[in-house]
Every structure is written in C-alpha cells, then in structure tokens.
Length: 271
Ligand code: ADP
Ligand code: MG
Image 1 (tube, rainbow, N blue to C red):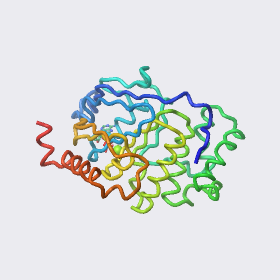
Image 2: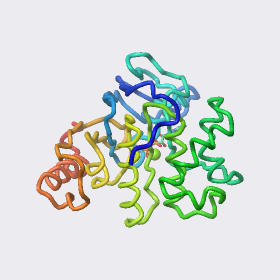
Image 3: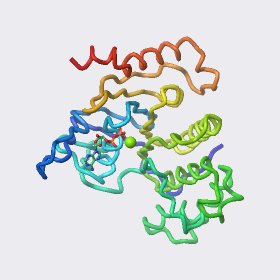
C-alpha cells in the first residue's frame, strides 16, 4: 500500500541521544532517584529501533526528554545535529496512555496534530479520511474512542501520531495492553505504516519477541538506575513473516537479550 504523507516530508531524520542523565528529586531535598544514567544512542534515518528494559528503568523518562516535555539533568538530544533539548514539537510521540480525547470522534482525534500545525479543518479531514479508510477505521471515524476496541483505539492513536508529520516518532509500549492476537495484527499494521511513511521510529516495549520482530536494532536497558547495556543489530532480513520467531537467528538473539535482562546474568554487567 502506498499513501502520500500529509504534507511534503522534510526527509528522513537522525535522532541522537548523548549521555542523557535524569535525576529526580534532587532540588527539593527528597531522596534522589537516578531514573536514567548516561544514555547514548543514535536512531539512523528511517531506522526502526526498539528499547527494551524492565519497568522503572527510565524508558518513558527518556521519551519525555526527547519530546521536550522534560529536560535532562545532563546530556544532549539532537535531530540531524541540531539540539532539541527542552523543545516540543520536533517528534511525534505516542504516550504510554493513548490520550485520545473522549469527547471527540475518531476523525477529530486523528486530525488534532494537523489542526495544531495550522492546517484547515477541511484540508485535515481530506487527508485523514482516506487514511482511516485504508487502515481499517473508515467505518468508525465518527465513533467516539470509548466505542472502539483496544486495538482500534491504538490504531487511531498511531495514525494521529503519524499525521503529526514529523520524521521521528516515539512509541511508548503502544501494544502493551492488547491481547496476543490483536498485538500480532497491530505489529503487521505498524510495519505497513512504517513502510508507507518512512519514519525513524523509536519503540519502547517489554516484549522481547516484539522488539526483535519489528526492529533493525534493539537497545537493552538495565533496571534502575536505567543504563543502556547493549545495542544489538537485528540481522534478520525483511520482510519478516510471523513464523520467523522460531528461526535460529531469532532464538539466538532472544537468548542473548534474555541473558542481559535476567538478574543473575545482569549482575555481571553492572559490576
Ligand atoms: P519506565 O518507563 O522504564 O517504566 P519511567 O521512566 O517511568 O520508567 O521511570 C523511571 C524511574 O523514574 C522510576 O523509578 C520512576 O518512579 C521515576 N520517575 C519518573 N518520573 C518521575 C518524576 N516526575 N518524579 C520523580 N520520579 C520519577
Ligand atoms: Mg514507561
């Protein structure tokens, strides 16, 4: 499926995170929490990068910093070499909670990014309606979010994020609450979307299979204080079929990530 993006793209972009540390609570005299320590990575143009790590290791904190909703205690974040620290609007961001506005229809939710960017309502609808139809939400565009299934809500939230029309998008555990069947369908759907829109994607998950299946690279984080302990290329050719999860390369990589995440092995890398 080939669909033109909402407006001409600025081109594929590279996201660089360098030595980002976030300490909470230091200013107020409360006990300090080092949520993230010296995180560095680069998401190359058009790359699909996953970040995997236990709950509380600073994944959402990292995303909030990249999105400019929070500032790092130290370190830098840049797109194509220009700093975006403390600045909002440079990336599309799907938060852990979908945050669809309950009083707006699906269509009116999906066009929010364009409305904020100053696109007229008529034009925004003209762009969004064919996409809703192409991605299986055509019949539901006038429904409110609470009338949709979990999978459909996430599709609407993802389309809204893509239609914000930034080259880099951050997806924070978008399928975490979905059942296995819906999750598998959504993964295929996301790969189609990625193919059609050619974004640089950074995807947070705690599901190892999902991280490997979707990604060009997987970054593994340690428990709190969150640090990046591995940055692994996924050398499995695309397009990938769901059955690839039983292949030797897949299982080898899964074992490697499990060993990194497993506390017994983990003590070796933290010392
Ligand atoms: P993850 O998304 O990996 O589960 P978070 O980034 O949400 O982890 O949280 C990392 C750590 O930082 C946790 O210990 C959390 O309690 C702490 N934390 C997150 N946000 C704040 C905040 N605003 N104030 C204080 N502590 C925070
Ligand atoms: Mg989180």
